[in-house]
Image (cartoon, rainbow, N blue to C red; front, side, top):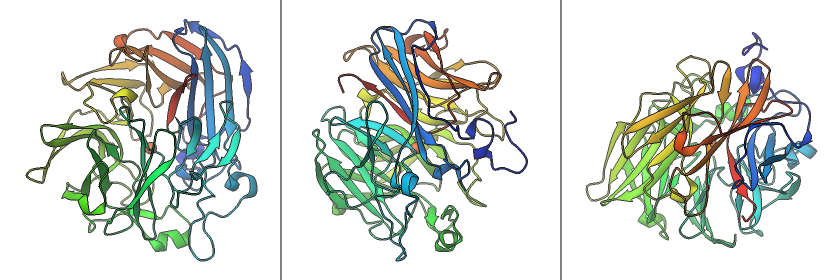
Length: 444
Ligand SMILES: [Fe+2]
């Protein structure tokens, strides 16, 4: 299979192309040994347009790919479309009045577990609840309390169990911050004032702060009317980060300028000596010419000095990366380690065959190269035990193997990252390149 057929956009070719079938397979073949501490499911979301076509990578119907691990076995693999109203009814997401219907979305970006619910997420709509077996339950709006879309990148505070998130919109209010308590009850919704409608994919929390990013990829009505991706780079908008004390309101947000750039994903953020440190995968610009034009992104650190109001920025690595993650127990706290996909130096997307593990304290990194034609996806770290050390556990990822046009779930040892995989689970079909996922232990 060629990676790029002439007439099709990249997201419909090669391993970006959707799969046609929903598959259930049990007792999967394993090379190596699945650690017995892994008892739960690894589930990852991504776009998989049911018609086989979509105008942009970001807008295909969500499909979940999950593997259950137990007793050293790979118990099952399943993939299921998220049966949203868009999928089932072809319901329009925007009404004749131009207002978005948040019960209609593609649910294609992330999947998380919180307060006993599993939620498939896309930033333009309400979450969609699914079961452990990846069957769709339906739209979830926090019992009617949620009045905006929900980002696909909520932050689960490991100290409090609260879920912090936000919704953004092309109509006012452009940005609304939300906080759910550990029981999943929405307890705060706060309009955050920003100058215009920008694409706000992700954000960050620390122990004491919430960090918003208002970056110059701006809604364009003309593009929206034309039916394409309605956001474009702006040289005029400027770029700012907003720091709000946890529990604060709009009036408490301090907005500080940063050099124009775009960030889909922070790796993590934490408080340090009166500053807020945010490690981000930074694009020097995004979607300037069209909604496919993206230069490579690199890991940078913002040090937001609160007393002076200045933001210092420096690169942490020369590699082109994406899909940064850290140990979920360190979200918002000082983290030593981080993980990411090395997206490679080629112009093609996702041609890299390595994952990277950063030691941010030592300023070093180590790569795990899966070999020619074997392309990894987002890495997810799973600790060996609740009190295990920060890299004492495993890193899980789906790896696409071009030679056989198939995929594996690969389990690496966090402490021996470059070493041989602990286990390689052969999946019954390829897993298209997608977005984000979570490890969901049985006890969650
Ligand atoms: Fe994302």
